[in-house]
Length: 329
Ligand code: AMP
Ligand code: TRP
Image 1 (tube, rainbow, N blue to C red):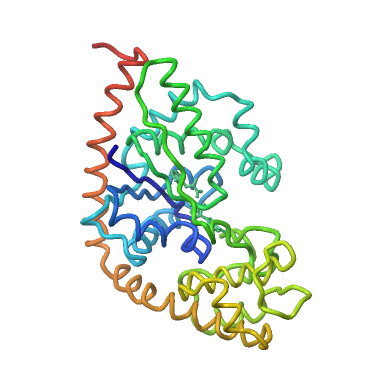
Image 2 (cartoon, rainbow, N blue to C red):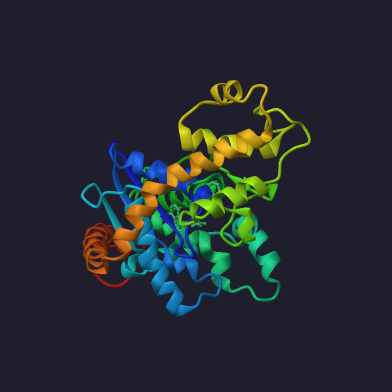
């Protein structure tokens, strides 16, 4: 079967190195192997309150990030979710066969709603129906994501099977694609929680952080009670997290990293890590500034992406409406 890849990032703030290592870096590699759609999921972003002006800016900035990390609009479609309304239509239909109990089990919903207390909209709850629609609309076969999105992709698989058994074979059942190392980059100030855009500034390194900020954040990063640079996610979770980042920034494997720092302390390792992150981000930052200066080119790329996605989405929705019995023939 021909593979089709789909993934997305929410246009909320600048992506961090967790987003890069867990998702974006993979996308840039995978686009060479498979037909790909990369979406800027603005409808997901509004499941928590957003400032409208900032959201519009973040959409363009996220498009610039996609290009800066190496996504090539000649190889993949890059587009904005809300510009292809079929996502919402399919989301509604899938919501009618999703169970409340399935949604209640979602870890992300439990975490986010706990933080927001009373202030939780229904959209945050039904978010996985929209995500399933994103994926199923294109007969996606592969979904490259970080570990935190696995549960949502699993639910999309369940819903694809349920729809197929209720209405006849319509959707391809997608596979999640997760990095072997780095699918869950942890916060620099607490290796027990994942690095997140909504965490404290010291907890993450954003793709636009300047070299001196990167050095400061890495030097302040929490370490373990030991003193050796050894990869052991159970006994040394903090240093193992930093080693994972180093692995992705340099391409060195864990054994090579351990050998490099035998007899040296955490200080030496952290200095080398900061240098490696600065070097990893430098070319991305240069390209990002170029793309941000050219909104006309960004617009052209997003228009072309929307047109390509719309064509596929339109064809699929015709079949879906017919299977469900909506409208008239
Ligand atoms: P988001 O910013 O929530 O839209 O996430 C975009 C992508 O980055 C998704 O594929 C996430 O699974 C991934 N991601 C987010 N946080 C991390 C993290 N701390 N480590 C690895 N991947 C992550
Ligand atoms: N929910 C994902 C996140 O927050 C983003 C996303 C939305 C997505 N739709 C998707 C990822 C479809 C993969 C496939 O990270």
